[in-house]
Amino acid sequence: MTLKKQTKNTMEKQKIWKAEDVIDLVPDTLLDTIASETGVDYSVKKLHGKHIFKLFLFAFLNGKSISLRILEAIFMSEKFKNLFNVQAKPVKHSAIGMRLATIDYHYFEKIFEHLIRSPQLENVLFDRRKISVSKIDSTIVTLSAKLLKVGLDDNPGFKTLKFGVQLSGGIPVQVMLFKGQKYLSEDNALPMLILEKKRRKSLQIAIFDRGIQRKQNFADFHAQGVFFISRVSTQKMRVIEDAMLTETETPTLRITADQIVRFANDEGMKKESANTSFRMITGTTKDTNHAMKFLTNVLFLSAAEITELYKSRWEIETFFKFIKQEMNFSHLLSRSENGITVVMFLTMIAAILLTLYKKLNNIIGWAVAKIKFLDQLESGVLHDWHAEIRPAFSLFPVATIFNSS
Image (cartoon, rainbow, N blue to C red):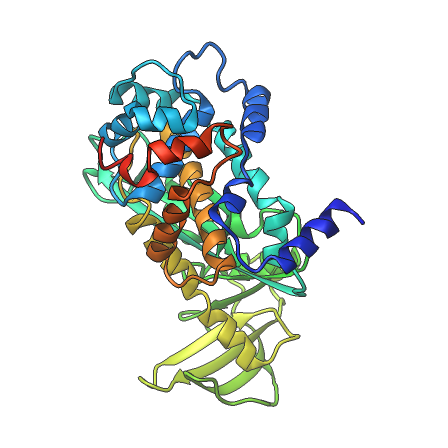
């Protein structure tokens, strides 16, 4: 039996995942290997890459508010040093900020890539599924232009940072920091995520909101074999064929039409794309009688299934709310592009681990998942991070580490 099959069978039998099982996805051996590959700790005596990783992970899990001074207090705690075998000299919050600005972000990018390609995560995302649905969107963080050297110019006196995320199975599997003024437009930003070639283990459908409106983008998705579901509002369509409706209602929508269409005019489209046909489903909401039009190139699902899949797009909105409210993502800890990228990957890594724990244990709510996760840490997990971790917990309960600092 192959290792992958063994892992899959083990996961199927294991109904409950402990915090220890999730943390084991990023063991010290992996962190050391990636450090060697990237040279992240070359000529560095303090704040090694894995120390930054562990510091941020537990800061994310411990509370909503994080600052450089809070990170300094956590790092300097004797209990933290004993728990995680961090035998480092004292550091100031300014040193942490400087390290974020200069540390090679590829170190954290590789940890992120390792996680999304791990057999455990792939089994969660693709196990027994013939269709995988990805939700794609962007989120904005805006700060005073005096605080940032990077970012997009949107409002006078402010800089806008735009992050794109692809969510699959509730887990972030792709993330981008958009650079360049043109990416203020979703028509320029989101196709970069949608068209990015990733390893696919099932048929994938990309779901995105009305931010993409450029006709050529839809034709490009279809030409490159990308299945999608979106909404349209302003484009005029020419009906080619009316399909028979087999289902006319969902819990929230009345479906009135299922049609094969083309754009009414080919303005802004390449000549070879002008005759691209799509499927358009029209309906009205039951509560407000609001008209909605869905555009897709998926022909193998019913109209009701298409609209219900689009409805699931709301998951990415709740994810953005989660990382901003529970993981400090709306407050930047670095003003440099490198530091912003580092924190972006650290946030997504922590989000993957916490979301896996939440999903595999059927926990409702991220805040509850954080409490349960930390409760298990108090009980003495994390043995793979340091051989003396279990006896250390009996002397230094994790729950008091951060409150006492």
